[in-house]
Length: 100
Image (cartoon, rainbow, N blue to C red; front, side):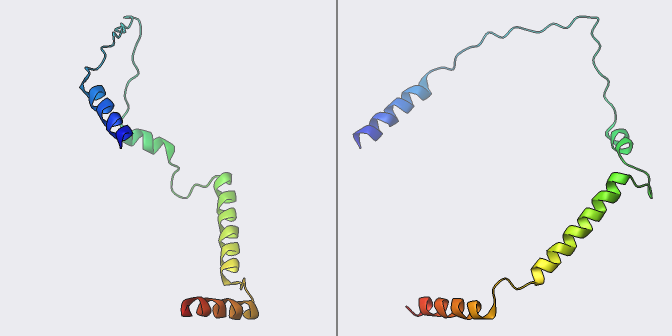
């Protein structure tokens, strides 16, 4: 309790001190330096998208991988992981636990 009180007093004292003042140097740009021009967002988005119906080889490979992974996932989802005997033992163990 005494330690907590001392910590609280220390925090209050630290909170009452004024923040330090930092002397930051101002950056002056040379008149020869040109800043980049800003482009409209719509033009940037349009430049990154492919026209309708166009397909890249990387996209085709990716689509094939997605299809293969989805097929594998559905096969695994339908497969039985635990056989009927083990399932019955697990259910019996859960019933015993719930009965206690």
